[in-house]
Image (cartoon, rainbow, N blue to C red):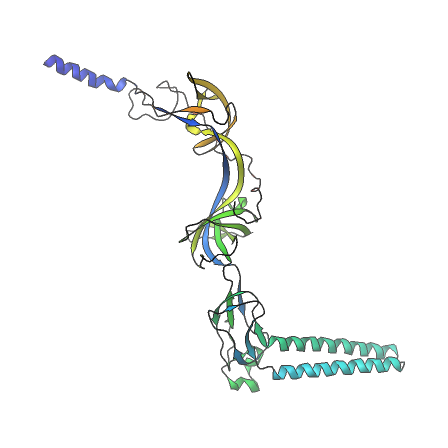
Length: 377
């Protein structure tokens, strides 16, 4: 009985010195599209907005819209009393006609050059005054400058706006409203931008025209866009780090986006199609040589390979393998006296070392193919 116990104890003491069998799987060499990307985050905002106010002073006689109305470019939004403006325009027209008549008369009468020069100056001044008077009459009607939805109307009939709000005969006919608040605010509908920021370390890689894929909160489908602007001055984020502003114009008209929604975007700095890759776990090294165990009809065969850059789980193959080749991917092996030994190296357990991969993206600096179209892939 004691002999049996001793034998069992001997087995327990020595089992840790026996290497566990390596487990291996296989992977197929294939081509894939690899991308170099930069992450940005921010909020969805309307692509355009307009805060409008009258360019001339006067008493508001009509308010033609309210919040929620849809307008197009040129639609009338509100009007002020233009009686005085029309009178000024008529007077300016009469002044111009008189100046032109005087010039014609002096030219026919053989007036000297000094007199004619004065007449011509008067004509130019009168014509400029008429142009301004006409513009003022047009300005008495506030019109939409963008297509979109009215979000705010800070105006009522009887209000006095513009320069005449400081006083005068018309100032007593309504409430004087001389503030910095816009009379009417409009935002574009169905057209959006992502107002985002990018970390200072990545800002140099982002430029106008690059394509972006946007993940918007509450939207299942990927939203596509194009970088339209990159800020040139660093800002400070809420965490105190340096960031740069980035605007991404959303592609096409969207009915499923809403202003103020948070979103994360992946800006595609570079994209390379048809890159031959192999599982990074299949790569082994012997000194300066990198190789794989290529699977054939009669088992595996050591095959030397030249590799490029690594993209996480896969690595670029420059030479030595072809698409469709099958390679062995070694599992982790527990070395002598170790528990769950990992890593590589031939220093303790006889396993070949993994090659050191630099993780760089190939050929950095080139733009995304076809960037600037803003379309979906």
